[in-house]
Length: 114
Length: 112
Image (cartoon, rainbow over all chains, first blue to last red; front, side, top):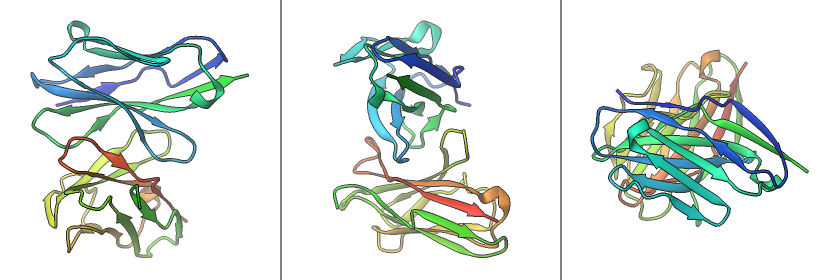
């Protein structure tokens, strides 16, 4: 069985603050992929990152960074110097290496105010 | 088009009515997925197509839900005798090789 938990339902920050979105997962698979998606008010899911379970290197892309820790089954997402345009719902998802369906968490709603 | 297109964008149905939701995937994408997203929840898997073959329909909540992709491109999700619990956003995603998923903007279904 697979499960993704995003314990933070809503987060509100002021522009330029750093914010970390937590993601904890459960899986019996030894190889898997982890994803983060952004869902703005328009509704489409925008792909942010995919991570292989055998690659624990942290990744940085501009103001975004991801911290993957297999030992604690966590894949946290940090936005540095947040902007109003970052306001959205963010989803963490898990997929077995040999599977195809994404298992999503319930999402974290981020509100960045000026 | 460049992305996954879903229509209609919004649908209001009376309870008991049949509805059909359309998904136009990115041209050439082999894999197509349908997800259901209830209010305040994450998307949940409904069904998966590889070309015209429906390889997994384990997520369809009841036999009132039916999906098809007869020519391996456009897909239709049909819901018969809609119930209030069917109210949700229905998301379609396509992928060239079951690896990178591109999602559409979804169809918001409201059953009244």
